[in-house]
Figure 1 (cartoon, rainbow, N blue to C red):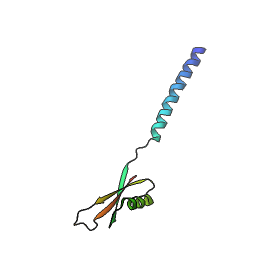
Figure 2 (cartoon, rainbow, N blue to C red):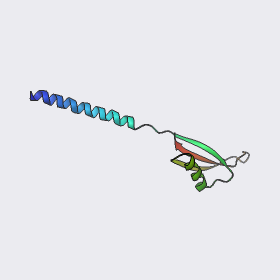
Figure 3 (cartoon, helix red, strand yellow):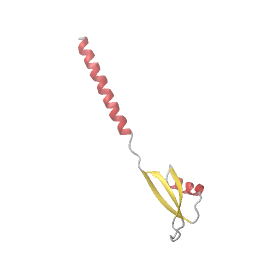
Figure 4 (cartoon, rainbow, N blue to C red):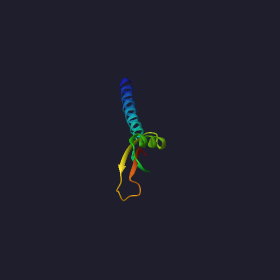
Length: 82
């Protein structure tokens, strides 16, 4: 009788470990990074960061200079999780 209980307990433990591992994998979804360009006349990093955080909760901000022939000389690039 004790061998039967040990076997059942061992199978229960292994099953529990497998289920917890599968649940843990589902919780870790892959976060992709997306970006949005905002055209501005002068790009200041602090202003760019404010604009990005208004649009997206957690966003990074980078000022990007365009070609001199482009309509907008500066762009603010917001990087956020999709």
